[in-house]
Image 1 (cartoon, rainbow, N blue to C red):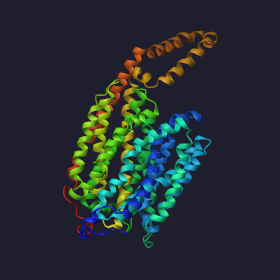
Image 2 (cartoon, one colour; image 1 turned 60 degrees about the vertical axis):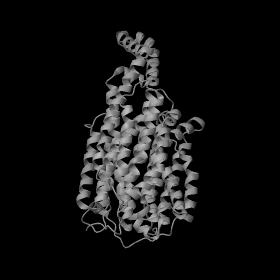
Image 3 (cartoon, helix red, strand yellow; image 1 turned 135 degrees about the vertical axis):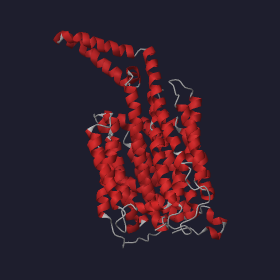
Image 4 (spheres, one colour; image 1 turned 90 degrees about the vertical axis):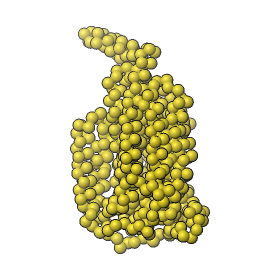
Length: 533
């Protein structure tokens, strides 16, 4: 179901009531999927305590969800064509809601991880399917506007997630991080049944079994290796290298295979379209740099400034406000003047805001930092969704599902790589500074000191020769916890954050190079500019 062409007049360029109703159900699904990535990151300490487990194990509640996303996203384009977007979207909503309900009743960390994978299988389809449904409903002339609508949950999820998680953990329990999805999922299902257009699937299209056997496990293994880097603190660990290399080899084999079948799992022939190719390059670099950096902000508030999870989330709101200012305008302008003229100023704004954080300290003015986040939000709202718009605007209608699937895979891989890179840089630099290591983990260090002090009498009786070493260790910890040492440690930790933000800033600035090649005029639609070949 596509919108009328621009030839019908100015009215067709506006988002009519029918399109906005469809956008409503898609945004609801996107909010659930994206929020569940960020709320769990805040709840990891709670899971460690409640399930008596380690951080590495608890982190699998995030890693398992991410791997499930990576596994199911490649299927979405084919399944949308084969079964119809409405049926598949409703099935994904139901699977996500069921997975959420099961997560809330988990009584072990193993059960929670398993049900998070089930959640991810449903959540992975929601965003690419939503993009496909909306772009078909709006038509090529209005893709920029519709991407702006869909971009709201995509951009605000990382900001709203920590706030919601912090609030729920304070007023209720961790179970509500998942239970809250159940009523939203039921409402979305009913809404979708009434609002989404009737399916018109094309069951004659064949399924690329070889492509599936190569790409889905390849992506899962590669992301598993990348996601293990922060835990191992090195790329050379077997847990990183073995799955990473095997996964990368499978992905490379898929790239070789993808040009052979008539209907490949992911149609890399879409990259013959110049706009799609340039957008893919730009999005890859942007996802690595910006989404990797997004991880750092809550950690800075928590570890250096001593904020709790709720306030750490609230301090991110200037970014969301900036996004809301620019995103609707950017979507409208991308349809009229081309994405290139919008994305470049957006990248400049992000760089200007992030530059403030490269010199961040342990007591830098909150006014300055919040102002910088607002400027970054302005740039953020003018960047990612116009890149998506440039990618999809010149595709034919039947190619939109596969194009949106490709862009979502790129975004997922890029953000996972960026998160791993920034985590390793930050962690390694802090670990090289003993005072910073103590200052950013004060609760754990105080607990360790209490345990050592408790053990001292028993050690004096049973192993008197070990007493000097134990007394030296407790003395060092006690000294590191004095106000002066903590202040010095926090200053050193802030320097580590500044170093990591500098790396992120350089990577964001490099996005300018491919962004220069994005369309810088009113884009031609698929009708007037079909794909070559």
